[in-house]
Length: 427
Image (cartoon, rainbow, N blue to C red; front, side, top):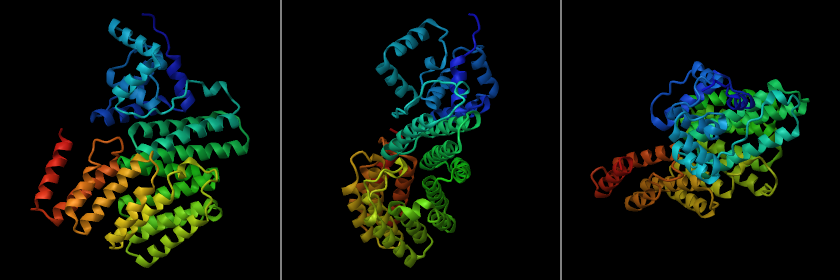
């Protein structure tokens, strides 16, 4: 077969601002996520794809490329080399519904991440509002997926790729200052989305790397909403690491942003994050004061105002859930359970991840009150596999199991729970 350069893959890489080495890293990360084994793609591997020397990558690389790009490999310019592979590829290309099913089955993700077609940024030197609005649409899709299902490797890699694409437009395009500021804000928001997915997957080192980049980009943007988002994520990550002093400092930094000063909804978010950080640090009075301020601010907020999709999760239900967690950390599990049940009653139907998360919290609060049978019944409703079983929920169920075994190690209910967990992990 005559060797032909893979212009489609090259165009996708230019459009998303990825070098050969960066694409290889993303592919290896995806391979590791779905197979548990390290990918071995290198810069040379990608060059072979681009040059046409390798027209049909190995199966694991094809799956990884589809996860990273959100596109079937045929749309990336790859050509099957056997009769069977040609038949499969042709069928998928002809039938969009079948292609979508095949993509879901092979990549292990149910997320349709809104792929964009290849368009070389180099051929569009002027960057304008149309580009910005398109990227905002992509960002809204990511936040909606996170809000409904939680983090995943597909969401993380898509967000990271979109951040690189945005920075590619920043580097290669011609734009006036206002557009450049918006591009920096979008790049920061995409990076923050990748960071939060990494947190949900309990990969703290990657999350810290994303956060460092997001803080830099948010500073360059001058956008108060993005800066607020970045600082509250910094508070969450510090909490995950157990650094509660840093978590409080990050929450206070969010309060210095324009968004906090001018919008009561952002003000409520800031105070709720500070309440969590203060409760963790043992500053009970400060935590209660922050909760009161969060509630007062939310009462003043116009919940129908147009805002970034990144704060769509924050409703009265969410504040009830966070209030429950604060009360639990203040040593009041009965108050905690009351608030978390208020949260579950008020959550939107599409908030599957948050429903699973706060249900698991309710089970933990019930153990603290000695209601072991009820706690196990509650926790059983969110045992994986579920479509909302993110890394945080798996971790929370692990915390629940440890608490149950400490509370009643020899009880029949504990033994039954342990057996159920083992069966869920090794079906």
